[in-house]
Length: 100
Image (cartoon, rainbow, N blue to C red; front, side, top):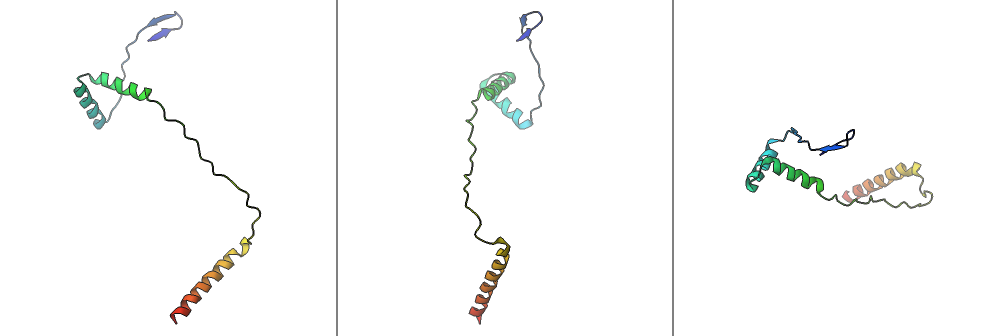
């Protein structure tokens, strides 16, 4: 239904719209129309209306990771790579001593 704002009249307009459906979708619509013994137009109108009236899922609250202050760093990160190299060297030396 359209409302003419200037003349305050109501009148009905039949609207024709063209849309492209892929072959698989059109086949399903045709099968449904045959099963319900109704026209493709009626089936499409029913499907579109059902989709538009479908209730929206409830909004999901976004999870926020809590943040905690752990205080100042207790490790000198400048020496971290030296420590890692030393630990790896110790592990290799231990493996070598076990193989003798």
